[in-house]
Amino acid sequence: MPSLQDAQESAGKAAGWVEQNWSTWLAIGLRVLLILVIAMVLRVVVRRAITKLVDRMSRTGQAVDGSGLGGLLVNAERRRQRSQAIGSVLRSVASFVILGTAALMVLGTFQINLAPLLASAGVAGVAIGFGARNLVTDFLSGVFMILEDQYGVGDTVDAGVASGEVIEVGLRVTKLRGDNGEIWYVRNGEVKRIGNLSQGWATANVDVTVRSDEDLDRVRATLTDVAERMGKEEPWNELLWSSVEVLGLDSVLLDSMVVRVSAKTMPGKSLTVERELRWRIKRAFDANGIRIVGDAPLPDGTEAADPTAGVAAPSVYSSTISPQSAAASPLPPPSTTK
Image (cartoon, rainbow, N blue to C red; front, top):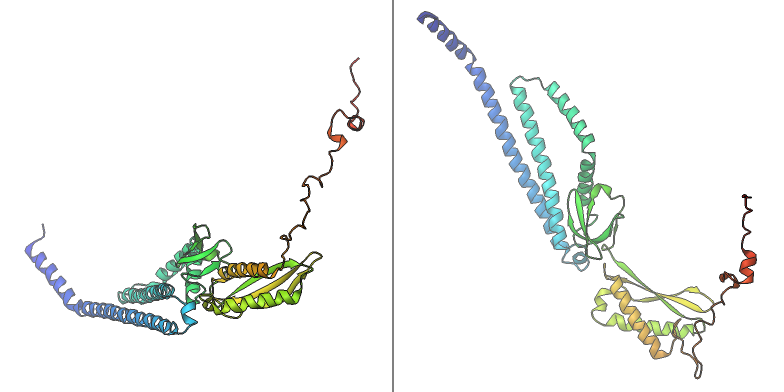
């Protein structure tokens, strides 16, 4: 059993050791506290700065919306999601860098050798990168798609693997609403090329096929009159961003001619304009007696041709009992049995 004197000596040594090292402990503690305080303050400042920057970007987009073209290129939902995504990425990166640097500085304050730790982190990062390379590719592709504003909510896009209207833009997956109502989940890393059908303007092209004996001047005059009337009526005067032009003959065949009509329209409204143009052109042609291919009336007193008249008669070889079929049949093999 230790004696009282041994206990007093141990307590005295411990008190002396504490008295000799308390200043070092205090310095380390104050240094760690200072590092943590600076890291938290810097993190809050940087996050607020990023939030203000994102809000300023959003307000700039609202100012652009005041113009006629800007309101058609960027909508509120698209701008909101893009701003939120950019802000979230920037805040996450800033927090990771600041807190990671603070953690390394705290470990260095305790005289811990950081070289093996950094080497292990590097190897682990490489392993994780190889194992989750598809996830990293999707994430980085989504970040650049959002930063470059390649497409947004409400745009009609063709992503190669799928096409439709964008209903949600994420950092890893983009959701598209197909023409039949289906929802496509497209990984951002799989998109090699993308066509945005909702930026800038669209083109409405209508090919009018008329008979080859029609008067081209009368056809052009009719199409020009239809184009002028449509450009002055609502709501087509807003959907049409240029006057409807008769480009001329697109092809000439023995029994038909193709005249092309074209116009620049609001993004996403080309099909609507094309349908209306076809409707008006057909009515105008009927009113002016211009025949299109396939609707030529029969002369008076002429009966419709028998649809079976052009069908060839059955071949004599189709009957297995006909002399021709018997003559063409292969000879039976000779019998090997006696």
